[in-house]
Image (tube, rainbow, N blue to C red; front, side, top):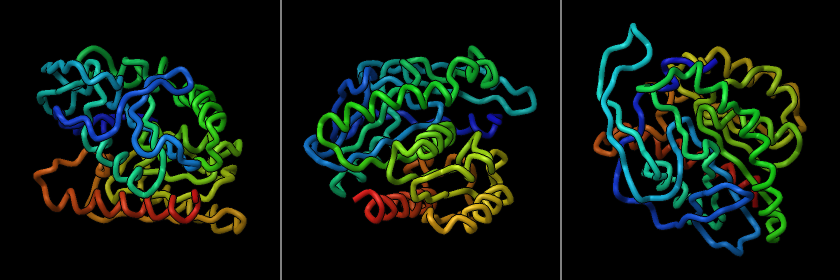
Length: 268
């Protein structure tokens, strides 16, 4: 289930939009980085905040979280920009390892905005099932360009999309970071090598659930797997960290390197 923790600590905005560019792939706009002629591609599937890739405007709004028990705070959102710099920097880092990286706008410019709706309402028209279907034309186009191996990493909401892609054999490697909506039954059906990176404090994917994932995967030797629980971090730590927080950056970068290492091993 999606809940308050899924929506905490929205991304800090920046005018820096990475070294990549914006392109349309499979009918969706996307931030892309890396060699476009690479035979190796990686999809980064965002959480609910990373949206349209046209870096032209930012709207900053203030409001109240839609969860009455949580404190008030200022919320900042992107209007028409993949200007969540942490994810873009991560895309560029993965690209530097030799991959063509695609960060699609699965929300069609309509991200979750807690000033106007609740996550429970928003998710009804932005389900991971729709993200899964929208990912298929992207993968088809990449293959039509000569890409032979595709990996995918999903953050929170995006993890469910990655799992669904793995279950039908559309990707060759999977990484889940602080997943949401993923069930034990999902893990029973994954086909691609899978790394699961979780947080010590996570109400959406608590360590107890991740240990269940690990137990299931231990009975499936045909699927290479790795489960790691990061101490001292909370849901969203890998992409919603503050760059001025050295410890938070260090912990996020550890997860990033784990992800790149997994793709280097199983998507090359």
